[in-house]
Length: 496
Image 1 (cartoon, rainbow, N blue to C red):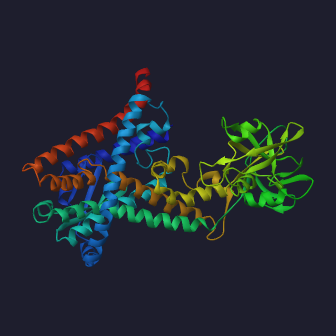
Image 2 (cartoon, rainbow, N blue to C red; image 1 turned 60 degrees about the vertical axis):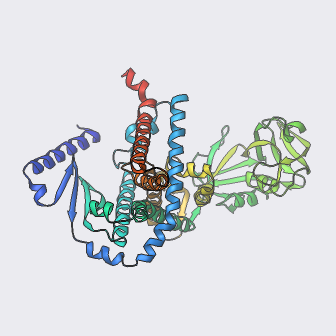
Image 3 (cartoon, one colour; image 1 turned 90 degrees about the horizontal axis):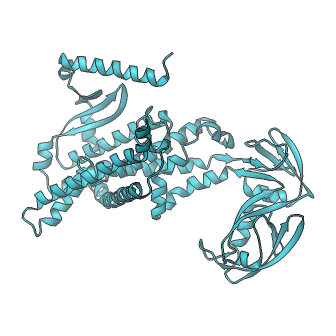
């Protein structure tokens, strides 16, 4: 039997053969359809009337475009620096072959990319391409440039849309500022849709109720990793705060999961897995493997309680730390230093939550991470995290859905969240990619127009110099992308 890959390849070959046959017989041309390999561009004048109506609010669209242009230049600088950083890594410490470095997985092509859910990737790409092209089309009409046709890009299935402006009119009948607005419009439209999609996504996250789960166990404790924890000491638990409150009661620990119940000795706290050299905890004598269960007079049975207490301390404050060292209890006086993450005190320990040999996971942490992601865009690290976000979180697909309970819409809430997540991320990513200063990308055309305007104040051959600069930048960008495919996989190719 043919594999799914074999069936897909056979389907593509048959489809491509039909396209070439229709093209050779002139059928495509008669119906105003052009092709590039297996990709069809189907044109129509339908929808141009709607485009005219949308473009009537010219002041609004110009204001939006002008406001978004700084974002295009910011994205241009960020993406070009990212390309240069990628080159440095590739030539100094190239990553080993992995699914992430597979050429097919570095492209956002549904059913070719193996890392991302294909159905949501397809929806996200269709929305992104339509939004991008209609952004250009609207600004063309706002600036008085004719749009000859609208169309659909088709490759077995529809994969996007496009708008076809009158290029001669665009380049000869408009001012430079108008062209910059038109060329920037697609990227700006993607960014606007990304903001709207992510805002809706974050809002709807509030209708997911989290669960506590068994993340791991030590020894012969009869709990199954991955099970949902329903109660601790008779108290229903869904968050780390619930667990903290539940553990502060009782002389033993009764954990009830969906598979059963166990009773454990009351040994709870945070286990030291590492210490910062020459920081307060190490200087005070604390060691790896110890379990901190109280600070001053406050019990810290969970990581939540431990962090909550330390957040209330100040640098220079001396605290009494109570810890289990094997079977004995030891007390240490620790004088805190400045925290690298705020104004509170800092011990200098790396800890894990420890509940009598049971390690718990909290799906609320996933919700917090997702809700905080937009706020992280104020830092370079946040932008890098946003670009690679789906490598860590692919949406609410598979087993992860067990750890959340929708408060509205039932399981349909997961589908809606996934659509918003992927529409938002793909619009963000494609918008950023198009910011690159390389023709034929929008960023290349924007850079050319802006750089020509800058040079024309001093150099009579500004246009020629700018074109060469954009050409060389395009070589750098596309060579870098090609090398990112080749270098990580070259050893694998040589062996084969």
